[in-house]
Length: 190
Image (cartoon, rainbow, N blue to C red; front, side, top):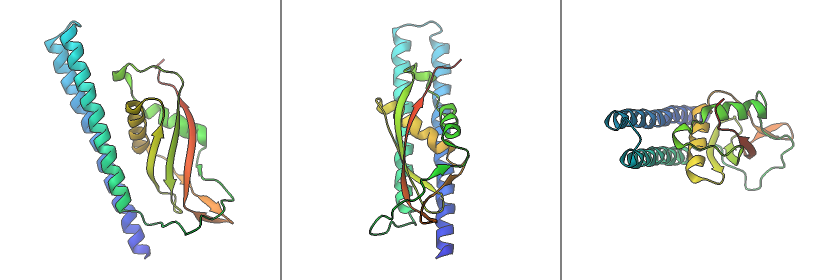
């Protein structure tokens, strides 16, 4: 059983890394097309604006597709089945270096410069499942803008292996839990 759990964790890690590269591919493709567009239309005009918007929509769609693939693979790799009755949590899950450190890491990973999005602070609720071994899955972001939420969720997956989450505990034993974090992100660059 331990081997099976270890194999599932390795598969989830490998797939998560592959999906992060999907985000990088979308970014790279967007950057190439924007450069080409700016060569074709060096000065702002209606056609360039229209094409920029279409490229932005294409990037948003690529991110959302990658997030859907992650969700499907996570469903296949779930190894920690919740008990029929959820245990009483005596100690909440926590990020190894604290919530502020996690929020800073997430904020730095989100790049919305291409959207010209500057609502500060942008309030979200980030929810994800944390198993008894500290593995994260099923991340979801709720905020006022679906497209921005997708990029924040993608940023979460980009940083998910840059730090450890300590699982929640029930009477000293690590247990599966759903973590819900209200966060405020700032997107204006100094």
